[in-house]
Length: 460
Image (tube, rainbow, N blue to C red; front, side):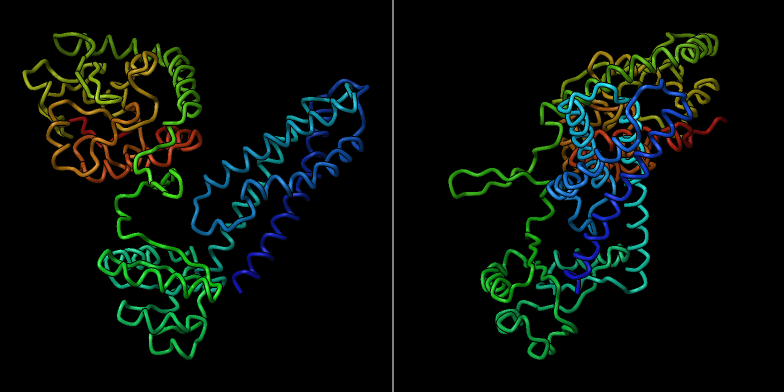
């Protein structure tokens, strides 16, 4: 049933993706020549629509190659949007090439650009609405994927907890096989009657194997039984807690190696894109925030004796120390290199509390970004004093130093800033590092504007 539903959904998705191209082109043409009064003499609308007809098979093909017609049940929408944006960029270049080959130089490039933007937004909105609709169906008990769980240890319990926390994903436990039942039960995996004693209610769409290290002997017969019956099988390894979100597989001959710490920003292309965004973004933000920085500098100077800027050593990329700059918000004190500021810190001045409340004290860090010591988005850098403490007591703490620290980050927009849980902060930092994408950075920057600028600092 799931396979039939998926095929039907793929057909609907493919048909609606292509159909949306036509009104997108019409709207782009109207905007260019009727709303913005484009120059006459260009080719007519029919020529553009014929180009869309020719483009349609390439849309199906490229979307399929990019995985846009696979199940996104367990993947976030940002992943789907990223694939859609890449595909449409390629299609935009293809349609330009089409007009160039036919030597049609009277086309409107603004019309094509508008078409690209409108089609991308339209298909994105359609797919988002489809996701919401499917989530509603699954929450009401429709379009469920029935899973047979093999195992009853820590990994199995973790999997069950994940299913219970995400009912909208539509995974339903059809039954389970404990290790003692496995060898006899899996021989008849496709038979409802043979498995009735193991709480299996329906024939499973997928078998999830979640065996512990001590149960490794059961693994081969379980996989063999699944393969023989033609049932999809997924494996939760007993070392799952050590795996990154997107593990990379290297091969040496016939041996597969799981790379536990290869991250997206290890890719030179990704690192280059992020650095370019940091340079351009920090330059723009320095110019835009210059009046506010001048106001802060005057306020700090008048509020208490001491320097305007507060310079503090932090640990950055590859564990290299650097000096991070802020507008000074506290009175000069002897614990500034080891003291961790708190919400109601008595060292704060009244003006310092104000600029901290609205994150104005962080503005000089744009210069840290420009110098390459920090990024606009990333894990917050820590004092060397605390790094030495946390690397011994907090698991995976040092992983954060594999990327540039940031002014804002995934942990900060989720409430982990200042005097908050180190464990929770590191969990969010690791998630960001392992799942980095340019769109993820943009999402964090927007979330920072909406909920991260004004914090819980007390003004009194």
